[in-house]
Length: 85
Length: 283
Length: 191
Figure 1 (cartoon, rainbow over the protein chains, first blue to last red):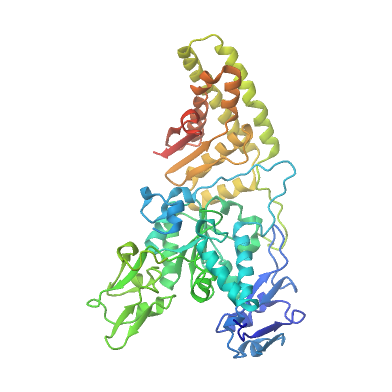
Figure 2: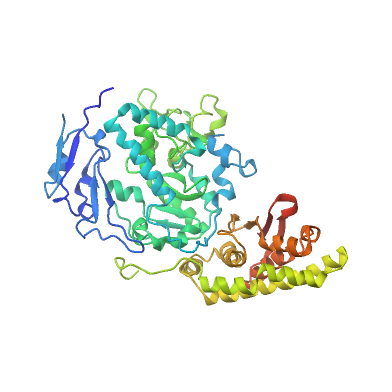
């Protein structure tokens, strides 16, 4: 079985620095392709969503991406690229 | 009876109702550490380990789809030896019975909705998940997990709170955290609940087993209003134009009872899954 | 939480100083030696009668001191429990007695957790398997005396005392014993 033609979604983390505070792609994606997770976690304290680099955006469900490009339009930092082979 | 019951149930507390067995709700408050033993690191808990393992499997969708299919089948077959958290859909009435078995109960923010939608729940009016058991007394170790707070509730408050989320349209899923220890009742919907999504989209069963109930419609009582159609998170209910009635696909039904609690004419009932020969082994 | 981004330094664990104070005061070897001396050469009936008084007395002291030190050395788990009790008007049974029973056993036994079989609004059930007191009684008084479980009066009285002192109405029962079941089990049922 060949690898299906899923969308390749590239997130430029130098541009997408506060995804949890911004969350435009997270709330705007019809297919709920994206997810956000804390990458800087300390015991006994909350991770600040407004501090750059504390959260990272992923596209774990890119197999569900239809290529509508809504996320690209929603992203204020032009950090998202969607390509199909 | 499903495999969770076989491993952790006790007929004394209800046939097929492992989650009503008090043993699965009990845990010690303290652990004495050996000299030099450090407190557990963030991400060393069964929930995080299960999540990481699931993540590794999910990654195979993109690199090796055949391997992915194989790993999913294996994970589903591992049953009580599965490294994954066990979750099972239960209807509101049984979630309320759990509220009397688990001490303490606290509402808290949903970790799935944070991840999938960046959805923040900052106070007791917004919290949509519940943590159960003495582990909740130590929630401050990991505020990141609880996003700023928890709200301890009495059994009566818990029942009202569950009813509120049921009204809004959330499915109750009982979740284990290590073995059969019940650590939460999640209030879930598709697609932001990781457990429902893994089951519905990818066929991964351990985190979202079906309830021991199945919905049925009495066509004589159904007025065809369609309220139940909007409530189903599993795509099991449709409005049948020809008959002008609601129709439940019982093979797709997860037995959450959301349709039943919303039906204005009480046309929907929950049947015991065991009473349906074709469905009694379908979990 | 005033500032959620500043790390808190709470300790959720039992205070080690409290644990060693209880361990010293209620040392199993010391108790077994005292009991052996007091019952040397006595008949089985006499040992039973003396065991009851001796271990009831021990159990009461053991739990009274646990309750006292447990308050003197709070931890964050306990503080949150008390806040949750105030907030909900519930949880006092089974969680308050559970805390003090865990302290009592964890400080005096070679275990890292006390197995809790049930803890809910109706019942508190817990279990002791590799009991140090039982082992020491076996060594000092012989298997026959140990198997008559004079020490059960200590556990039963401790359980009774913790509920009485916390003003909780509960019926205390022993539902399994080491000689018969491989572990002792105690149940407190809400009255």
